[in-house]
Image (cartoon, rainbow, N blue to C red):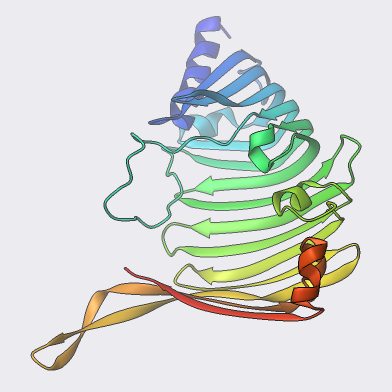
Length: 292
């Protein structure tokens, strides 16, 4: 295969994965004619520069699928993935006059990755509040605005930490499924993100499923092997009514009602001077409404 053909496929990948505010650059694309290709470097940038770099990647894929509008990858293995920061939001920075529902990007191609592995992932300090290095195994798909991701990651920088979970979401029906489990030793990312005194070991579980306007999730938090908090969080859309000449008429817009109901011994999560105030059992019930 000629350099021109290899450049064509690399360019097709770049244009398929890129978009407004997202520029994809592929360097050193080799073996495009076979089902196993190698890529020296993939970079993804926004208006402020590169935020993700993938180095020394091996790609076992279907070249024919790309030409028919699919990126069908059996295995993607990378020597190193660097996430310097999270991507910045698109636009001028001025808030929209009205909030819009959450939607996944709908790319001109569908993406299916049967196996994604990375020997080393480095996270910049701004991503989770502290730099970290991990290994990763995952599978993922993004098809017609629907995502399905399963992953397992372990820290490899001398800190004890494992993260595993599954996330699904579809633009069509706004149904979210989430099952996340985190277990870290002292001084871990979660303890620092939550600003817990003395940065204890943390075990955290979050599970939930349902459309965003009728969503429920359970959570459990433990530190130093002792359960500290357990409860649930729910979201529900409630239609509004408006009065017209004494009659109640349903409005097409709806409010979003959120309810949190958690209980536990949260004293150890605060500085010592506040622990006596909270005691050894706290119940928190919160109900609020976000207007349409």
